[in-house]
Length: 144
Image 1 (cartoon, rainbow, N blue to C red):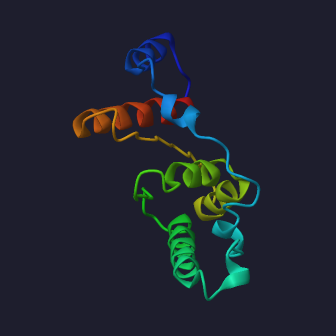
Image 2 (spheres, one colour; image 1 turned 90 degrees about the vertical axis):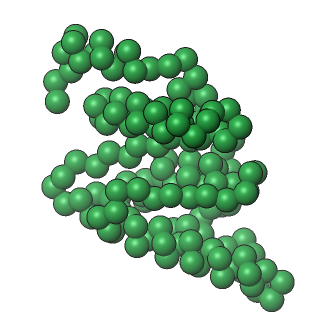
């Protein structure tokens, strides 16, 4: 899509000052922390008895992500307790080339767009979050 001055003006009107603040606040994970998402190798696998609940949950999460990457479902929703690593995990997944490769394999000749938005629950009411998600999704999809 060719972006004209008119389109650019519309996109700029949708921007707001802290649009990317939450995403920029996410620290990169320690090397290897989320490799289990793609490889199945967990940092807890050497002590399976002690961490069997974590390992079981990791397998389930990995399978859900893998299924989603090859499905027609438009959204992959992650929720959990504050500070549990949701944003770090998704930042890792959305920036990893293996995600793009899996989506490109699924998409065939269609273009792939990864649109991400990181909520910070304490900063906005639910309606404002939805409005901002819609805005950033529109802006992101038209810039790709």
